[in-house]
Length: 299
Ligand SMILES: [Fe+2]
Image 1 (cartoon, rainbow, N blue to C red):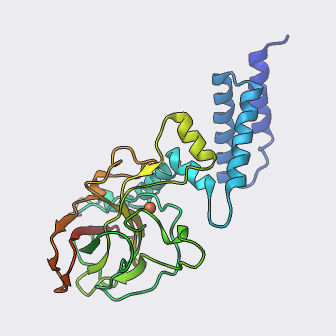
Image 2: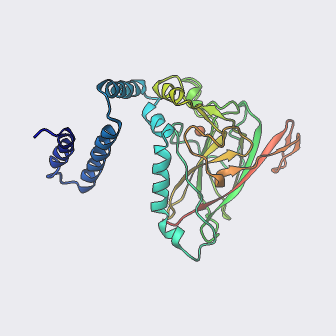
Image 3: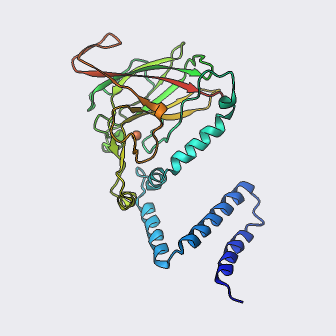
């Protein structure tokens, strides 16, 4: 007897049945779940052939928009909240012991998305260096410390820092000859402290001139991210942390296009009139100070 519902159910079983000999159990688990959920979604939607073709054309365009500098698939993952979900699950898994430790006095700093502008091999600079010199934007003095979850300082801990300029533009977007700007690696001193100069970051749009931009417009969404500075904080023996600090007064904190904001990462930038800065230098323009205490979980 012909029963359409039964036959479509059989297609799912038929696909899964051909995985029976798959030797890698994790691969088998992933494919099984993806096939089950994809088939269920298509049934739930009663998806039409032209709708499926539109989806294929969209994904084709996403692929065609990628090149050496642009990764439209990461942007798709980011704007659908998938990147942030994977980050959260990963941090929860890797920090399990620290989160369950009843003697811990502080929680590990929350992680957030890495984003597309990380550039490996930023220069190693001494504490106190200025990585925002000559770039658009108001100067900001960043300081704080890194400890473990018991408050013990972590000396010689690397802070790999990067951000856009005061207009939200990253060095990678400044043209072929710009080289590295607004990025560096700093190492905490013997008491786990760090300090350096950069700029106060401003909000910026994710690239919206490709298929993901079309998708955002179709969803009625803006493409903006609130102002933030990126940090990768790591030292052997600890779970490496990839996170941002967000400027407390930035627009879009409540509607980040990539869902990366966590309340614990929102930082007050104190604005000061021109004059003496914390490191003794005399500033001829207004500047900001921002502080943050990073906490790493033991590996
Ligand atoms: Fe960013």
